Image (cartoon, rainbow, N blue to C red):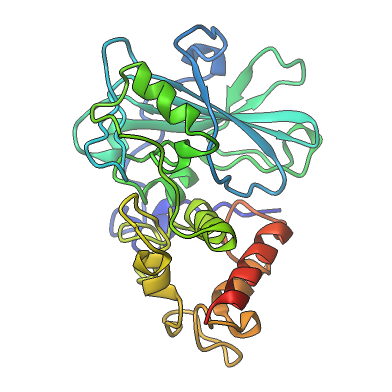
Length: 318
């Protein structure tokens, strides 16, 4: 089973000098999912989908947003949205046909201190499906499946990589299909700086899809403030301003760039153009159950489709 590492134990991820968490977690909050208002679904509960999905060992996911009446999401930085106080994001996971957990991230304050400004955690569904219970320590093999629910503190392993602490809810990820989800938020007046239209990763076909995959699956840690920054300066985060694939930080910090932190005699480059077999990034995507495997938490199964996509992209690089 996956071992979820508490975020303050990861190098560079904060915490006091003695390795203790910054404070008792969570700061108040909920015991049951029904207390969050999720089960009282109304017109203010907005479902949305992302253009490129984070691999979760085959689990299917559903997402919802709620913004308080009269409030707006701060989209002044189109790459990094910031929720208003009172806004909530839920994500439900279904594995092997079983609804196993629903996660919540809620903006509860605006102090400038991430740990005081957000409530994050996962609720494990009861067998009767009537409610779900907050699981601060996570849960192994939830609902009789192979799905492991993360320790609440482990949420920050990924979410610390965004200034607004939210993943998926952004201009690029809401521009899938015809950009209907992005347009819905614009039409509802929920964005402080409405964009002119939907966005797409640069490039076409395979190149575009590979960049989007790495953005969705890796960039929350591999970016300038992500948890992987202390060990590597690789940045796999896309921007709406990227005009060509070569403009992206993915190309600039990974393609043809020497390995920095993880070393292996069989690999010299993060991405070796035209040569997947000697690309360290691809190798680490392709393994689990070792210190080498990526992602290092929350996955026990290799994403074969993702590996095939990135392999084909590397093969096409000159």
